[in-house]
Length: 121
Image (cartoon, rainbow, N blue to C red; front, side):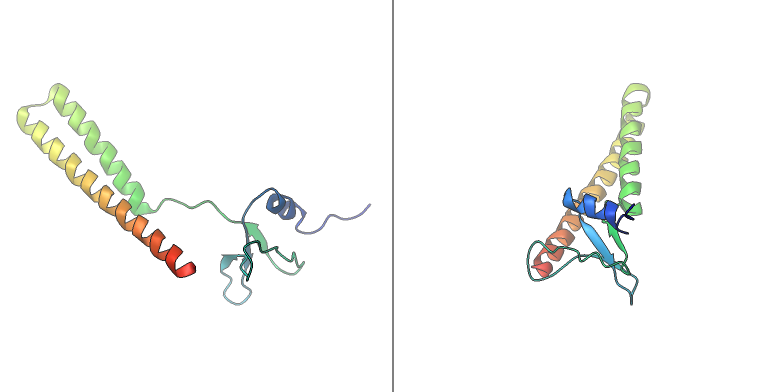
């Protein structure tokens, strides 16, 4: 029986549309396959390491901001139902501050993506 290619599972994933990364032997960093054409076919060398590009992970700062928004929103709702006029204003201010910070973070992130796209073209 023939032994399957070392990268058989990755070859199949690539053929099905997955983005493949190769590990740089010097820096040990992972990067997408790049070259002069749009469709760069991996060479599938046995002594190279390949992987499916991992999905982006949400940053700790983004996660904290999302949690702050959720917590502030819950405080606003609680204050509306059970609180005093003073606690309503405080909760609403916390919500607005967290919302403003999250919106700024999203705008900054969008700008970074635009900058990356601009420099990679």
